[in-house]
Image (cartoon, rainbow, N blue to C red; front, top):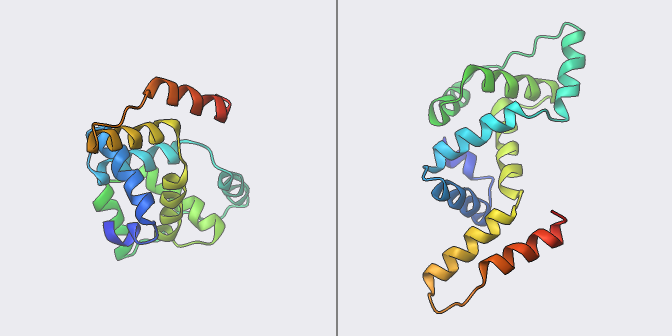
Length: 147
């Protein structure tokens, strides 16, 4: 299941997830599990559709199949996370695993200053001769991003 979710990600996106996981001392699976749980807690644009359909009495429970069972097992998704993604997936007419894949792709594409700094630190570790003023780089990135 891990590979089937990762297949929609570029090597660079997988590297981003792996780098974030390493920075937190987690496996990729554990990091993804935590990140998906956080995405489920945050309101998304799809929740507006979910709310509307629920008001109409629509059943938005996730449909279970082997892929969903493997998803739950691999990432140890809790019932509330599964229910949230399941409702969002049903609301937009997408199979649950496809919806989660899309969320994972979006997550990996969302670059942060922390991601850039981690990448620079890894480059510096590979080549200690690189003289990088990390504080100046971070400040410049935050300035450019308007943070």
